[in-house]
Length: 217
Image (cartoon, rainbow, N blue to C red; front, side, top):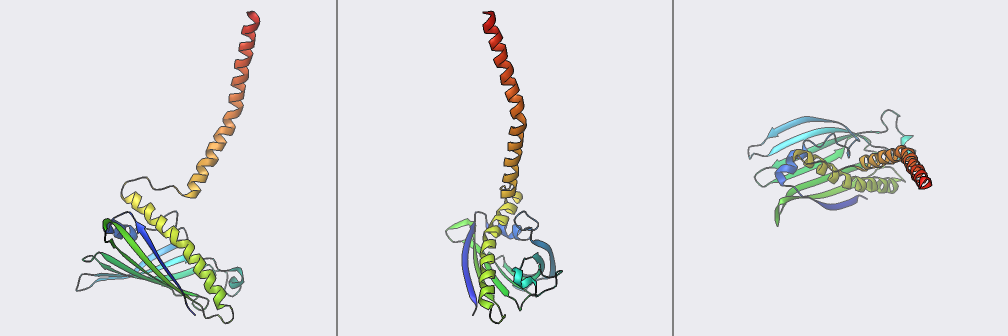
């Protein structure tokens, strides 16, 4: 049995901007698990479509029980192939991705179509499909459920990494990550803590001065 996922996302940027951002997505704060990317093939077809194949290396933690089945040095590394077809005339880009190792444990195949939204030419829609399968006897369903849940959690991060890169390309301040926000809160709390003794000392000094003035009166 294969588990299926279907989802749609909207990017408030033109198709051309999203196309440019697609090739500049890594590195970014939302995709730190992507370690390497290499273009292994590229060609332009006779009908002016751009075909590309990339090899991505990702850090993808397995369930603890599954890590025992693989050597420690490969248990966290996943190699992913990504094929893409760009049709500039119709302003569509279609990508296909799938993992080429750990296939016995699980295979996650994804198909994404990037296209202009029909009623808003300045925005881009991403239609995402995924198929999750496993050939492990007896535990395949548990493995599929784990892989599908993790895939869904990463879909939101994918949108955020696009928004981050698009903001940089458009010369805007990229949206802050949760880590950045937490750091700012921590720094402000530290500054407040450091300033508190000085503020208390200043208030005590002012109170003493006021008391002395009242005594003279």
